[in-house]
Image (cartoon, rainbow over all chains, first blue to last red; front, top):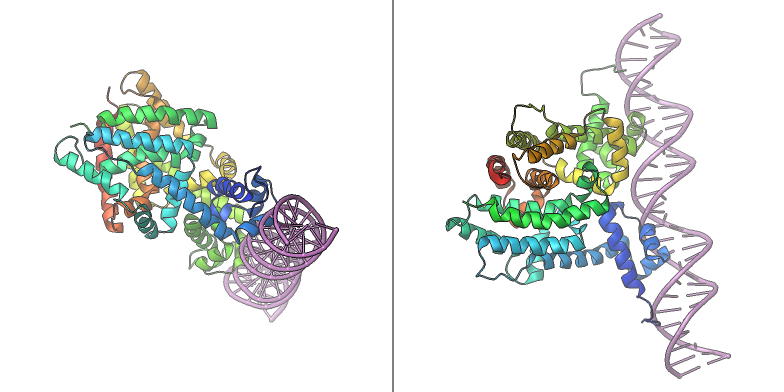
Length: 205
Length: 205
DNA sequence: TATTTGTTTGACATTTTTGTCGAACACAAA
DNA sequence: TTTGTGTTCGACAAAAATGTCAAACAAATA
């Protein structure tokens, strides 16, 4: 039990620090000492609150997952045209991603390392319709109706690419475009507008 | 000096094994023992040929980088329109990426995890033209000339996104689209055609 | 055959990272 | 004050990973 509630409790302090370091370095690259320093506590306290590095990681992962789920799940208004719908998705996704830009590459890796499992977790965790299917089936209908043209799967891949890749590839883009953190953040903000315009015309018949 | 040329020389043996392991585990996650096992030699031999893990990594990374650079750098025929040029880039990139689809996510990760080291390696490795600049400056000129419209950087990001992300996010897409390896490979092959058509119209004024 | 040169290996050393334990500590209640 | 409970810390232990070295080895050549 906590004795002094004056400051933020140590457990959250550790989790926040761990998030920072795991996002930056990955599971294998992260060091407990670095997390402890980041949290401003002794390394032993990490073991007191979370038995091991792996346990700490799995705790933190749950919260990343919740964050990303929030991004993808949309209330889908059936009155929307397919273009509006894709714009709605893009807006929600990018607004959320700008807040936590490092999660994207982290998630890509999780999919890489745990091939089949993640999809199951998503299904059981959300207890609702598969978020990807909502979009893909909407796209399929729109293509069938002639609202937009192209292979539905390719359109879906393109949509996710233009939204997600600038975040997943942030480090790479910053490096090859030689942009500062601030400059790239501006590019991302501009990109939201750019993508909305882009979606307006990209799949038009 | 080599004494028996009958079999593949140990140095290449090690490099190939290292590529495999580094691609799968990244720099921090890779273990020298695993690389040695993969190569079928003693771990000490790694140190004989490459002094340290980092040296080995930097050698191997140079080849990955060269591979990716080859994808990006084009003999840039000045007769080409910007659209043709981007199509040329897309074709080259995706042809090459289909051969080695695992490099994309690896590059993204290593940029993310070891920005510092990579910059050093690139510096020492390249007496060559900055691969990104070749494209971006061409795009800038084309925008200035009114051939295409949009912010050059955004166009560049979009171009790379539609080409690279389907490879980097391969595991994710396979999972959420519920596609087998073979089906996704087909999607990638189709995508080449799709992207070429896409580029035809996407940035038109 | 003996020598030289380059390669490979096992045993050992070092470094890095994680994990454990008990003493000291802070606070609340008896 | 004393007792009890939860927390923090430093010292130490253990494990994991990297790095070093001399001896054994294989092949070419003197």
